[in-house]
Length: 414
Image (cartoon, rainbow, N blue to C red; front, side, top):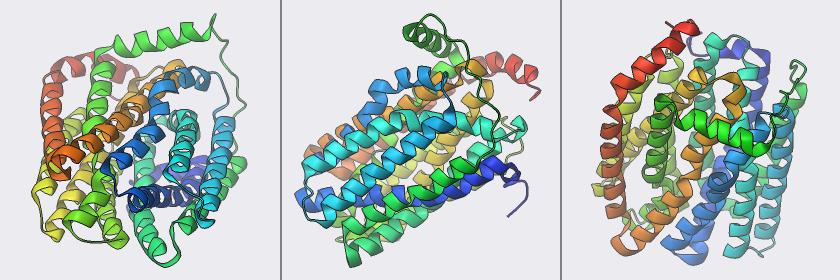
């Protein structure tokens, strides 16, 4: 692999985090796939698949803005230590209930909601923490792209392992492996050497900071429009994973192995997209990438919705995976580049709301539409929305670039 692509790994703290998180995220993807399979095996309900996705992600939408205020005040490493320990407890509880045949959809929903509460703090903290782990800010874009690469290596390996383990040992073993996979990332956080944390003197109150962060984000056109684009693509473009068990069983007459192949195809595309972004020398051109991949995402979804050929479906899922990760990483890098440091936690919380917080509504919408229209027509509608929304966003690019230019000059990017 080219040294340019992995240049942020020269930073010791990021290297530790990269190794620990890669192992942990493989377990996370195993649990995500296994949960969907378990729900569908127990209920055969498209609506309940959507409901489980909704309850697991709705806490991010409801509470992340408040979490962002605390993230700007507290020690980021300590926050991550707490969230990783709690996530390990959640996965081990899920494993115990499944292995003892006590699991029902009610427990799955409750534990999913608990994991959602953990993610309220974990996800934006993880995004903001990248800046502390990378000493040279010129490597920030590469670190974010490598972070996406790490996620998608896990996305590629996790579903394949889950499909094999479910078939041979059952869902409970997958949950158990996920619980144990948190140990490496906890150790990596303990081994990091970071500067002494000096919290900012807090303003009069939490709501003051909350309003300040919202006014900053939504009062600045580049941040506002990019967040709206992320929210739209999350609402419509991330419904693929929710509906995947239906395609695996009803369209391709398969089992957990087929589900693993479908999700892994998307993971391969995402892996390629992350490598392409990691090889970029500069953050310039990110908005152009957002427009191109947003439209291509919709095309890939429409192609998959019509396809009844397994190999063509794998190809179209590869396209959607590539586009999704390039959009998410491009938006993340763009925001991290232009944000003021004392508002980073709050902006990353708003990014998390747009990225993850809108997904539960997308899950619920996709599950409901699939119940009445079928999964293929649901993806056709959502893919068309991705294309239309991205084209509307593209009209604001001249104004967006004009407003961002002074920030890039100040930071030495231009």
